[in-house]
Length: 296
Image 1: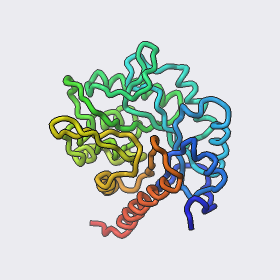
Image 2: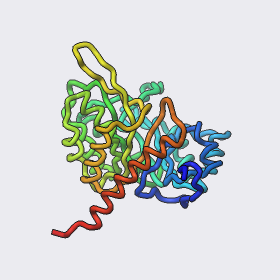
Image 3: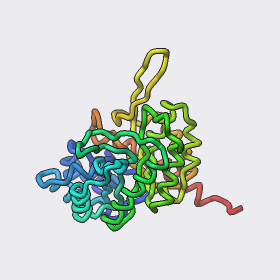
């Protein structure tokens, strides 16, 4: 049966330990008309802060599916602190949607009151860690719940960084009690760009803190000197190398709710559901393995 016409509804509520897909505007109507057999949806918080059709669609989707909120505008790495107006709007969306999870990025995008419309990298220093911890604490207090912080994809590094990114995230989770959104594609992209070992990155993350995994496609840009820069553009299927790293992540963390992201050249919903099915197969294999493990 075509997955997009299967009308098995999933009760709205907590995010299940299955694979979901990012809900994009072009799929609103298809989701409501066809009720696809998708375990859950994730939406960008800032897209649903106003009224109008988008918010009405999300309210309708939320009646039938678990939903998570994924923010891009809180600028949790900003030394200027959190914009109280934006935080209040995030709180309002969360109160209306009642999401199973709320996540944001280890990045900054606001300075001097100007929004730069990008997720910019942080220097990995003790000072930056203090800033992010302070901002995460403020957001969690305002929302009355823990949030998840996503590791970034990066293309440049600060020369004065003193903490490996994976240790920075582990310290952040320990100090604030937040969870981590492990973006496996971002780990692969950054590891290739900077010469890191992606398995070293995974092994440094505390399994108990991992609340969600993201998977997405990326592109390659060929530079002078046979160099290759990988770009996290969310515009294609998940690469085989990322699927392999995902399998390693599941071996370390166990089954974790997993999301397929696709933001550029967005294909028909069927394609996203196919990618989610591949992730679901990996999740099921790990569940089966754990169920039949012999205690040692």
